[in-house]
Length: 360
Image 1 (tube, rainbow, N blue to C red):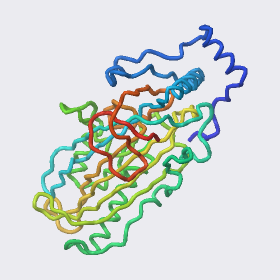
Image 2 (image 1 turned 180 degrees about the vertical axis):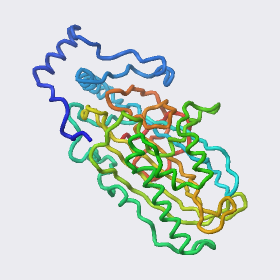
Image 3 (image 1 turned 90 degrees about the vertical axis):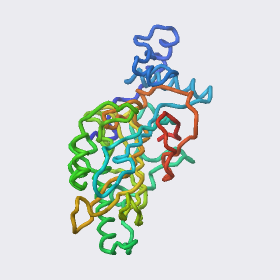
Image 4 (image 1 turned 90 degrees about the horizontal axis):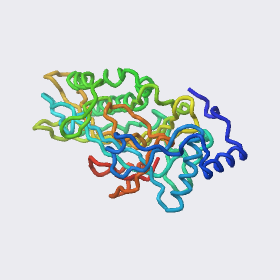
């Protein structure tokens, strides 16, 4: 894990002035902006030029930021991905194939300082902005409530369901092997047999179906594309709640554990701490417990939760998180619709198109 203080030396004032002068006189060695690729143009009809990475790219970002501030439109690509392991189908018996929905938003530029690595507290945001710095650290943020009988389910069954749900949340969102793109074995081992089979069969799929829905089940967990990301420090911020209720699914009463949790990650590209950023995941929905496959004994879980994701690239379909690092972002000020606060536990409206967020 790179040290948060490592990275390139800050650009001196003289060198900064020289680069700005070269830009003005047209003698700079590299262009500030590059024309977006065909894939980027397809992703948005009105995307402005992409921003280059590296020292020259950071100067370009600073200049471009000044321009955007002048016109009062500081918006960049971010993403909010919704991926439901079973799209609400949690029957104790036969189940339908897994599905997923993608929802994307634009947001304010983060971080603000493009010439330094992450601060001591990478989760703190500007005064007045929602942030995760006051949330609990890691698994300490996932607290099971006191169990009580619910709708015919015993205290012991509710307590066991709470504990299994806690383990699923930890495995899906905090497991280091999974986060770094490795095999998500901790999560898979907790699933009921049929859902585990669906999950494992879809891990290496890519692309989308005829409805534009990603085929990969990797999106069921927080998993950064291998080699794309280093976690900053050892802290992941967590905030949320869980509760129990009895519901009827296809004529069968099941024990539904309602979950609503936010997970904030501070990340950076390998060997480039100045390009750091935050990712916020929102997992909400239910984990349903019932006797499955005709089995008696302990209740088996079925993960029906939805995963929202802010700060990831638009347009990916391999199930991995691809952080939308500041120096790689494309600018799009044409989006409309409600602005989503990604630090709020209020679930966002369902959508399959790009939207806007308050930023991460």
